[in-house]
Length: 178
Image (cartoon, rainbow, N blue to C red; front, side, top):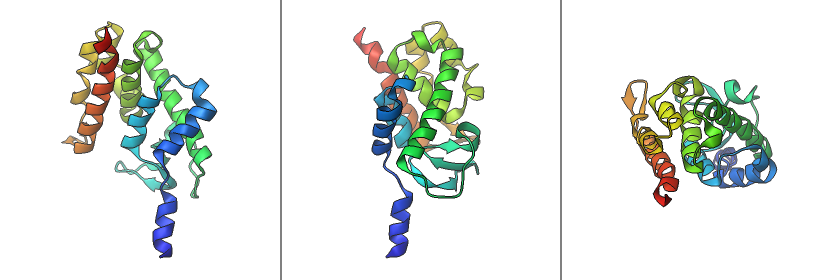
């Protein structure tokens, strides 16, 4: 019984972390709640450090030492996880601002680009066709690039296919109104 309780305490609620992030740090980030939901649901949330599939020490919602600073081997609080996540989101946003003219694009396109950047890394996406299309204001073309980003280690991953379809659907939302 104690083992089951310990496992439950290691998992945190993504929706709770989103709410905390928006309450405490909402004025520091541009990503919308819909964008945060896609990232959070795809990444999941864990209070205790673990090794991700790429063998990188991770905690919270996809936060690594490279993105969010040193990770201690302990249980993290929701506020600590939200704070680390805000830092990670801001880094992904800075990449979109710098390499995809992110301050001047539709919110849904921005959110999808931030989600991709959060997942794949700025170094991987900054010179991508998707970012070039965003800079050229070809938002439809940019959104249609997302399904190409479904490989990791040379293998097509079902989890990435699902994430990219959600990102693409979000990306297209503000374009359908016009």
